[in-house]
Image 1 (cartoon, rainbow, N blue to C red):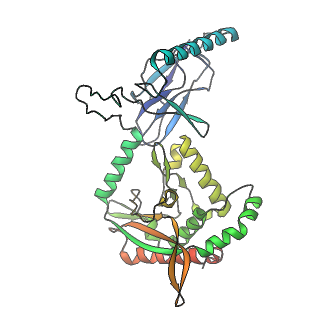
Image 2: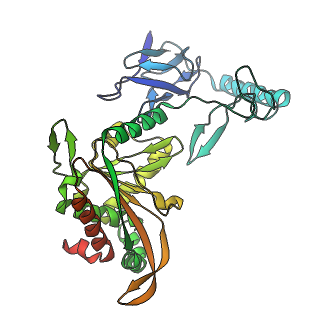
Amino acid sequence: MTVEIKVPVLGESLKQATVMRWLKQSGDYVQAGEAVLELETDKVTLDVPAPVAGKLKHDLAEGTDVEVGQVIAHVDDQATAPEPQALKERDVSLQTTAEQNVTDHGPAVSGSDVSDTVSGGTVIQTAPVPPSVGSGKASAGKVTGERRVPMSRLRQTIARNLKAAQNNAAILTTFNEVDMSAVKALRSQYRDLFEKKHDGARLGFMSFFARAIVGALKDFPVLNARIEGNEIVYQDHVNLGIAVGTERGLVVPVLREAETLGFAKLERQIADYGRRARKGGLALKELEGGSFTITNGGIFGSLLSTPILNAPQSGVLGMHAIQDRPVAVDGQVVIRPMMYVALSYDHRLVDGREAVSFLVRLKELIEDPRRLLLDI
């Protein structure tokens, strides 16, 4: 009997996907539950497993757009698994063919070959390079020295959403600077004990800022709200989005009910999201429902920026690099580790007074982290 493999339900708002990569080729024998291809949606990449064991059959090319419920492959469950000797002979044949290709055509990453690079234990296919690149010759309608690759579905979505945010919201950014001395001292004093106590969880800056944001949002809940039509929707919980940069683009997994999470849980979840985001292992539900976002350009060396809202949210906080700078303290010039912070907000909903006061409150909590523990 032949069993169909269909495009699974992707989410309420997602109806299409793209065949990103076949993990198994037509004619391969697959086991039940074994991933046979990767589908790319507007938000995540997901593996599609074989429903039964058998011989896989498909003829869809990588890059093909497909619809939810569409049949994309078949598995013949009457086929028998190949004998070990047959598998060995096939592997030897494949290796010989690969070696012959190198001899005949030169090493891969040249011409139109597709290269595989290993990142965090996951094989990631890079985009093919057109033959005209570096050849000094232009193909018809192409300019020498240029190459064209299609935008991924995720990149198209990022571009569309960011432009929509600029068009639909009245985005304004306000700035402040934070003295990181107290937080750095606290981390230095308790980092090893914290890691030992909480099974290896690292004590980073993000958890301090996450807790400070939760505290500031209690005082200024409008920054945790959103506009829907002619109504303001206030959130009972802080669902904190953590922006993560990946090779495929920016994704924003959400820490749900962040106000209930202590430092250790925040650190574990942030680290877990970062690892899985870079491997393409986030679930769609983990990217939905955020009410406020935090982005840390400082890890890339950014000193100052104006972050764009993650619609329909009304606020996003940008963290930046910590830099030793001379500052005036009690009439004396001293050197302190300083960070610029930027709050972009939707001025349709949030007034300047509330935005500036939010940043001042956040500054107070970071500069005296004892306030975070005492909730004052």
